[in-house]
Length: 392
Ligand code: ATP
Image (cartoon, rainbow, N blue to C red; front, side, top):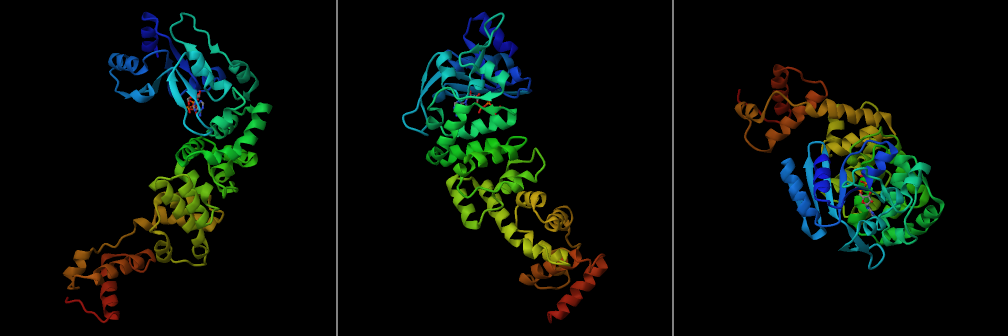
């Protein structure tokens, strides 16, 4: 920031710190990434800054933006722009503009703040009453059509309200309620991106609960109603663990519908599917005296993320504890004997080798064999039972 400020002052460049960082400084919250707006060529300025700091610059020429990865966070620079929405929920048409127009296109007054870097004694540029709204703890849209233009703002408003412990300004709240139906016009990618932003929050449960209360959770997918499993998780879990908890109550058909609607990438879809399958297996996983080999047989095909997730929020403590035991203990168990040892004992190469090894592992899991000598005896007995012999 110091370097950019020097450049801005030396050359009288109209550069502003904008949005989240200005908001968070005023609230007294730690800031993460820095967003700057330039009335002019942002990628060009980013190049010069990158050279001075020895940082790599990634330019997005088409959007007039560029970013730098610095040791203490990301810095984004954007050319000030105006946005026009050709139709509701579509992506806006963007043209270069003044900082005033750039602030006017933003979602909420608390985000429509800019701090000029080129002034000696900078004062916050606050054209929409954002400072007052921060003081009063209010989330407020800038114009009546805001949620209709961009229904992702419905979820953004709820996220800020809950994260900052703010309240929705009454007119904003009533327009938000009216706009939840418009969320169906959003593309899957945009909707998923906002869901991901919610799941990246330290405390997603209150955001999801509030979204459910306002009808916006069903705007993500109509089958989402029960957020209980998310509420059972400790704060700060990975996104996919929260996703698993959110989709845990869904039937397989509902889950498939949500996977399609949000155009989920492979890892998301896998966690959602595996979580559902695990939930449906819970009766089998809850029986008395379930041997470790049976438990392993039931669950070893599932992804680690789904297993970790279900072990953290399953409503059955027994299932949670068994999955946890599988993850920490059972899955690391393997026989001392390898395939080659069985071949060396004279078992012919083929499926029998794999079968014996699998059964040997199960025996070890269930505590029937411990030492190498136990394993040898067990293999010989197993072969005898199968009517095979080893040439020892
Ligand atoms: P966070 O603390 O969640 O990172 P942020 O304010 O930095 O908050 P971003 O999503 O990174 O949020 O967006 C940066 C800025 O861009 C916001 O402060 C806001 O001014 C603007 N913005 C982002 N999304 C929208 C949107 N859908 N409509 C209007 N303005 C938006």
